[in-house]
Length: 210
Image (cartoon, rainbow, N blue to C red; front, side):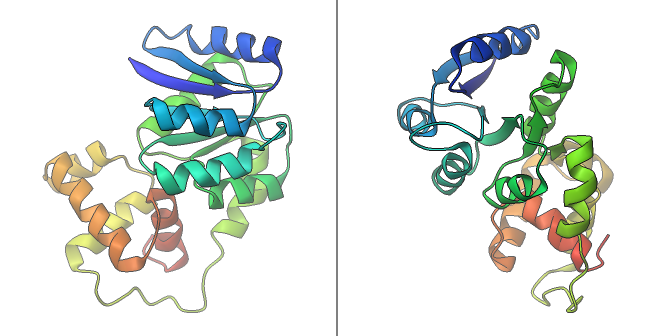
């Protein structure tokens, strides 16, 4: 069972989203919060695989909650679900560690697909937002030289991460175990002082690895 925390200040919207999510029998909303502060408090006492946050909430908004959650529990996947088709919000969400940015007019299939994409290590951004955000995220750096501490094996893994492959897909591509791939990615993140796979994918693209 995939355990989900749903943070949304409007009760009726929250219940509607819960019903949509739980149309997939493997997904279960095991925690609910009306603001970011409540969501952070729940994360301190319970484990969640995925945390879905609205942006505009009282007491603490979703962007600040995402930042705190990513710094404390980087293994948990954060998905922003909002009414705001705004590239600045999306950029800040991604920089704060979110693995997805979806609009509330998404249907159940789109929402479940985004949740599963986050779980598998992917990045899920609503199409119209992505069209504005991705060119800014992927802008090539003037310094296109990859850190020399990166080994050829790590460079090959970085390339596949940049192409959007999951750990399982990379393991099959390189004939290595999933655990070995995870260890390599952790080492790469440490060497490059990056937070997560999303930053690694962006690094790979900006440095012409992909």
